[in-house]
Amino acid sequence: MTDFTLPPDLSDRYESLADRLDGFDDADELARYVLDGAAAELERGGDGGAVAADGDSANDDVVEDRLEQLGYLEK
Amino acid sequence: MYVFGLDGVPPELVDAGIDAGRLPNFERMRAEGTDGTTRSTVPPLSMIAWSSFATGRNPGNHGVYNFMLKDAGGYDTEFVTADTLREQSVPVWEYLDAEGLRSGVMNVMPGYPPSRTAGFHISDNITTPPSGSYAYPDELEADIEDRVGEYDVDPYESYDDGTDEGNLGDLLDTFFEIERKRIAVAKLLVEEYPAAFYSLVFSGPDNVLHVLGHVLNEDHPKHDPGVAARHRDKPLELLELYDDFLGWVMDEIGDDDTLMVLSDHGHGPIYQTINLNSWLYSAGYLDLESRPWTRLKQFGYNHIYDAVETVMSELNLFSKLKMGVARTSGDGSGPDLAELLTISRKDIDWNRTAAFTVASGGQIYLNTDDHDEGAISPGNYDEIRDRLRDQLLAIEHPERGDRVIDSVLYGEDVYGDAFADTRPDLVCMPAPGYQIQYPQTMKTNRVFGEPPKTGSHTSMNEMNGIFYAWGGPVKNESGVTVDLTDFAPTACSLLDVPVPEEMDGDVRGDVVDVESRRSRYDGKVEAKRAVREVVGGLSAE
Image (cartoon, rainbow over all chains, first blue to last red; front, side, top):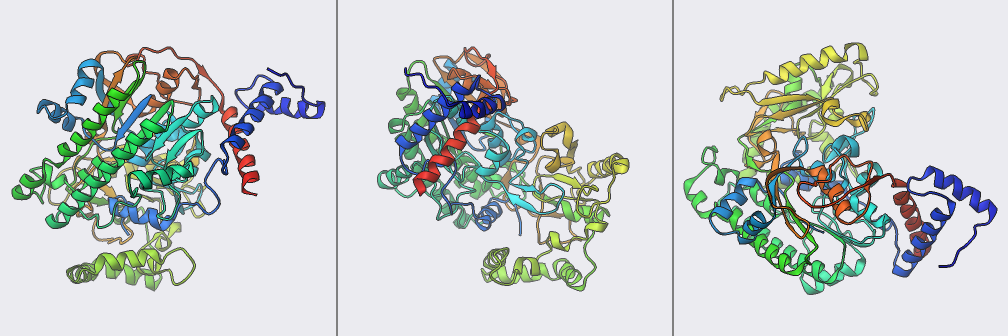
């Protein structure tokens, strides 16, 4: 495994983030996790977003209709 | 780990199937593994229940109290989506993803938009719009359509109360066909889309049992022995499909794998509904605006609505009119007919209202002074709430004479304080056979009415679902009670991942032979989400 050293300015920021984010012992662990995750997302291709693409939002009217059809809501 | 959800299956239905020798694979799981029941959420509604299953948290700790949530300090509501759950909590597949494991999810409510964690995610029947992309990754959707056929995300067309036998037969045929396809999809996923954790839910049992309450229960007012003779076997026939599928899974999985089957609640007959806002109105806790249009609507609903409904129903126009009215609301493109014609929250005089409900299920909010027009102060909160609670417990059905609400629970006792700003103040659990509703077409002089479905899950009688476990790590036990919050932490432990401290559920060492450790690593989930946002944005550009 190749070690890497964060530049001092980034190291300070990542150290601060590692303190705030549960699950990371130090800046190096967080930086490695972020880089590894970014590479994995790029390898997967596609949009890789955490949520659906823009425009893919739930439709309240559709949900309302279905809840009524299921008997959980009456208009 | 393979977890299959059969929405709404009551334990006694599987027991009957095993006793009749018709569910050999359930019987094998019982003989060689662990069986028992699940304990649902309060109230036992699928959106709340599956949210607890997915997150390992109690409703008060994921904040999904119903299909729709009230704004903090206000009176508006919004429907729950997968984004709501992600914003307020963390599904187990995101923790597994943070630890480098792939998950496969199908039809776990709320499922839209589908998660883009490693593995695959197919959204659910309630929150997925017809035009939305229901699967991630995108090629999975194409694969399903090519190899299985259309994946119906909108299966509730013509879904009435089941008392018209002709339509009932068509509904059952449709639901069986959908479930055959879903099983084919599940086989495709298990065979060709590898994951460490599968969580695939089938809605068929709940869909079918909603329209068979009068068929399965001889005491139901709409029970007809002839209709019952022709359709009462359908639930078991449906379970036979799943039993065959489970047998196939048992042959497929490895010696060290775990198979679990659960339902999120039971099912029972519904005889009557209680319109909670109408009762609150009649008891003086809720008032309507005195403006002429509201009073006119109120008069219309109380004195004219039934006649119009009868005539239009005979002309087969009533349901179309209601749908038409509903669909004109809220998009800003024309007159808001729903608001114009129905008694909505906008007709409530909030300055003169002490208590109200915003959804079905029996959850009541007090109009406390942290609301826009609320007046109940901390000093008189307990007195008003306790008086209301006593009156709710005393409600009797005018003809049947029975008490209709079994228990009224304090919100903080049921849900804790994590999402106190949007938490109901009281939760009513109806007596068996009753369903607590919230119709906008509110007849203020009528508290009780006909149920929209003859079967449902509302009372303590429907709080338990099925639980079966089988496979290498599974012990040979019987009669266990598993909370829905126990699945996620148990899955983490079986996959050798720390159980997040934020999960409320227990690792069920009495069901599986496993060691567990707890840790706090929400930051890894947060980092993964941020990375996906950035990479997704780059890719989109």
